[in-house]
Image: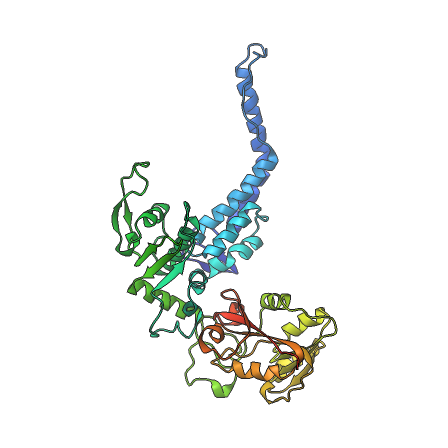
Amino acid sequence: MNAHILTGGEVTTGRRKPSDLVAEYEMKVASVPAALAEFNAARDAVKMAATVGGEWGHRTLDTGRLDERDMVASLLGSAWRHCYRLYALENFASAADKKRIEQMFAAPPPFTVENIREHFGAYIKDPWGSILRGLAEQFADLDPAFKSHEKMKIGVKGLPKRVILHGFNGYSSCYGMERTRDIVNALAAYQGKPLLTWPELALLEKNGDALNAGGTFPSPFNGRHDDKTIDVIGRGVWLKRFKNGRGHLFFGPEALRDVNRALAEFYGEVLPDAAEERPATPRASTAVAKDLQYYPTPATVVERVLGDLYVKPGDRVLEPSCGCGRFMDALRARGARALGIEVDPGRAAQCRARGHSVLTANFLETEPTGDFDHVVMNPPFYGRHYAKHVEHALRFLKPGGWLTAILPATARYDHGLLEGRWDDLPVGSFSESGTNINTTVLTIWRGRE
């Protein structure tokens, strides 16, 4: 993998900077008319070479044709794909990111330094973080234990030694095998091993034990290629397929240990929201929030949560522990009347400066009113303290009101303290706020009395 550094605000490799790539691209775009003129002149010369005295021989000579638009489009696609390979993004972009990148290649944006930073900058600046996130994206949907930052702590016993996959039935098992490939590649990127090749994947489809210890195996292509055998790297995983279309992917001790370590590093520790709850020596999460007690809700999460919530103009909405008021901003834009409660005077003042109504108080010490249409909240992630906030918030709703709470995934999969409708958020939804733990959205309806 290339070594990447930041110099003067620009990402570089040992080879070329993004600005160098853009400069070459712009130079070649500018030279397209001259290259076309040379091509057309050569084409005319070829046709003249097949005539005597310029007389047409009544034979069509196909010398091909090019136009400027096609050449410029080819240059644009080439520039983006070269950038992708130059920075070795295949080695640490997640499977989902690779699909998004391929979709971007179908209609690429202008090739500028700014766009390179927007589309590729996160991978180039933090390749290790991208590897960890890619592994978390693959494993979080395989088993609830892999979602839990508590169960993924180093030393926790009873981790899943296998996962159940679907899509192995019928004449085609492409979906199941592609999912298997993505899982193995996410682990390989963490381990520093080469990504799975197509011959290895084809071999695994025929021999589920091939990737366990590795070795030399007969080629899976039945003599259609020159190579009669292929060398396989041991990856500590094996696959058992069943007639019902399911496959069980097993992890050996070393592979499972690496999954555990990677997820523990990615999730990190959740910091408490109150001084009395802080452990004596807290361990920082992968990316620590500047305020150790505060994980503000990212704008993308606000939009997703409110997109599933029917809020009418004029509805009264409470946001406990409102922080800097991101939910209240969006609620006001929808015509709702929002009230925030915030214990931190500075953050409460920020909200008031933007025209919001905010009570400065500890939410758990406020008196329930029972007159709100909705409660939207992002209570503390630490431990099980969130349950007290949710239970107290329910008492602020009028009959028929709705509560929506963003909670750590442990609330759904480990603790069992609350009931309602659950909807998991994507991996890393709160990364920009300083924590990588998985999160989920709980919706509770307060029945009419």
